[in-house]
Every structure is written in structure tokens, then in C-alpha cells.
Amino acid sequence: MKDKISTMIEAAIGGDVLTDEGGGFVSIMGKSSPSIRQDIPAAFEAYTLLSHFLGRLPVRPVTLDAASPLPDLSPAILHDATAARLVALLPIGAGELTAVAYWLTDSVRSDQVKQMAGVLALPFSIESHAGVEHLLPEWFAAFYVRGEPGHCIPILALRSVLADQRFGGDWVAVALERMTAFALPQEQAASAVRNHNGTTL
Image (tube, rainbow, N blue to C red; front, side, top):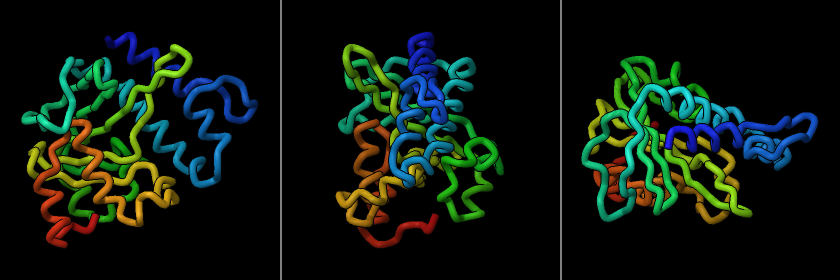
């Protein structure tokens, strides 16, 4: 499975956005609107982090669905072949959040959060086009303080989604809902948002 994931990563970041050669996802982003092009550093970082930790963390076949939130957020790369989803759970030491994922966590405004240790969850979807599987980073990420399922902080990773009218201006609520498709725990965070007691990131 590691070889397959590695191949999809290489395909995604392949191509040259300047010469228009190749057809990887990052290259396609380079041909899109200015707002999407601004997300290239974050998307590229998501792929490179996955590639880096692919050789350092176990890859586990799992079921990722809303009915069974992950009870354990130990660092690993989780793959659901049936649902065509992947989640990278990356270890973050105290004060290392922005050092590990600078672009992906650029929207985190709290210096206190940035200094905390925890687990950074990076979700990916796998889409098939013309018989070829493509690995696509989701527009959000999640940081779990101290790796605790009950302490979830959603992160806006790809800012271009804010231009999508379907979000209605409230990306946090949409992200929390989308997280359930990847079995990422979010119940307490969602409850805080419903009670208008969310943390300013």
C-alpha cells in the first residue's frame, strides 16, 4: 500500500506549472483562478508531509465513516480502500506545529495553540478518473491537542474554498461536518460551535 500511495503523491506533484507540462493536481491548481493558485504551497506541503511520514509511520487499513469515530489518534496513516479515503495522523511536538506544517496551519491565529503538542490530522480523498486514481488533499485539517479525541481544533488549510457560496461564510461548521466522513472525532468541538463557544483559532 505504501508504494501505491507514494505513486499517487508523485503523480499529484508532477508536472511543471510554468511550462504547462505534466498533469498533476498541483499543476492543475497552477492553471486555475488566483485564489486557487494561492493554495499551492499548502497543497504541496500536504503531499510532502504525507510522503515524509509514509516511511516513518505505520499504514493501517481501516474503515473511515461517520458511524465509528476513531477512538485512537496515535500517529499513523489510515487508509480506507472501500471509501477511497486516507488520513495522515502526524505527531507534533510542543512548539512545532508551524515548523512542521507552516502553510497548512497559516490560518491558526492562537499563539497558545501553536505551542501545544498534539496530532495533526490531514485528510485526503482518492478519486478515480479514466481508470487512474488521484490523491486529493481536503480543504481542512484538524489539530488534536495532546492527541485527545475530545480536544479538536479545525483548521482552514485551503483558503480558496471561502469563495464557494455553498459554505455560507461558516467554514468551521462545514469542516466539522465533513470531518465525520473521515471518522475524525469532532463531537465536542461541534457542540461548542452550536453553543457559540468556539475557540478563536
